Length: 265
Length: 332
Picture 1 (cartoon, each protein chain N blue to C red):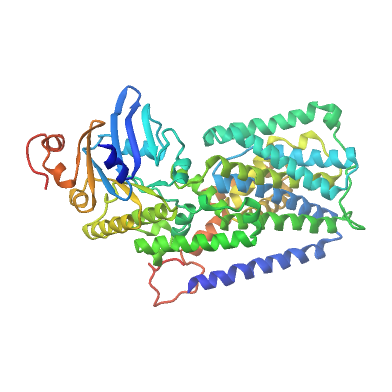
Picture 2: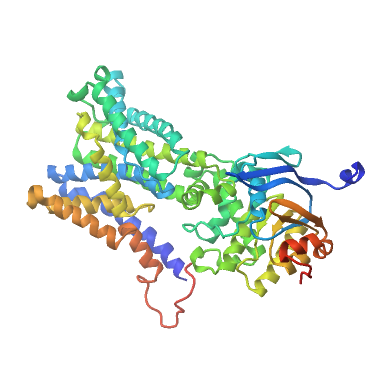
């Protein structure tokens, strides 16, 4: 990529030569990725390819063995997860991870905690600033829930929701922290067709809010409709990258998925 | 809407209980024994609230609360006897000292998981007890300290059992209000998120160490406050009181009442104290039924008495039946 291009396309996330080993197993090796601000970038590949591991290193859950991750120019590899979130990176998980003891609105409010500026005593004694902050936090949380379409269920127990709705709560929670980069790990898993259409629309609208999105997905139609760029990973190595159409007919990709020459539907 | 009923019922119930609690001792004020039971129970309730912070909000089991209790008692004694301080400020200093120690004890626990935390708390409680036992120059060892004065406010001294009752009641109200206020605040939500799923909580931006330390600090504060109130009430303290038995009693009372609730500690302590009192006729064999009672509660009400009542309420058991009502309707 020549310098001129680099200048006009703002690189938000720059992963260089990333390696992750678990014991003797190399999950990711020599991985490079550049995410431009404001794009939706899909990571696809067979199961076990290392996609979730890559997301884990970006959001701080996993510490890489080698390589650098630059977020807006700042090195974040090895940062703990709460630091990554406070820098503006949030994620959703492959298996929905909600907080069962809290209701839906409170789940989303947890993500507002990092924006809290009052100290404990202020919060306990309900001082003016604390009350104002709480009110504002609630307002933003309800906004996020309205965005995903769950405003009416905000006072419900999370156990009363079905799986697709729980996933939406997780997305609302990720949005409520006002991220710059959102990592979605197989968001369409467990959803029916109607919900997937709704999800694709949501991701588009998230992008239009200026948030950069990285999506790990298995659902090809979703990938085709929402992504600006696609990277294909197999055995911890990037084997192809380009627009959705480029990747779709790439022979290496077909071989990785299907083992023989064919078309991806 | 059902939520309106709940929002009206609960404050009314609380106010009724508060009025009851204010007028309760009037009937017993001349009966020394009953007043003693009430006052000791009250001190225990505050101590149980301190356990409630750690277990209810963080899901950690602590069997070292007696250590904070002891620190509160001995620091109060030290401030009043040694430095001649007034008891009320001494109580606050003792509570603050216990809170600081809570932070100190909390540090290693932020790095390790729940099962190991039990051991750390056990070690902590025992270390405090052994320090008290052996640091004779300061604590007078097994002989203990005596002559700890009662608190005085203005010209008024809390020297009667009745007046001390109201002091303790104030402490209980403070503990309950703090627990409730924490639950509704962002810090409370952060702590509960850590309890359920620490990884997801961190991914939401919650700092595990900060939240846990705040919690240990609050827990230490109330345990220390209870210890100071105890020291000043009895007037004389010695190391045997601050044993692991006390810590286990506190754990039992909290779990039986309902951990993680605002009224659980009160209900649990009251229930077990009444159970013990009514089983007195069995003398040393009361333990059999007492233990059986605890086991029965934990089998049938694993979330404690208050916890179970809350679940029944959510299932609509206490609400008036409405034939046209959809049973699958959301809880508001």
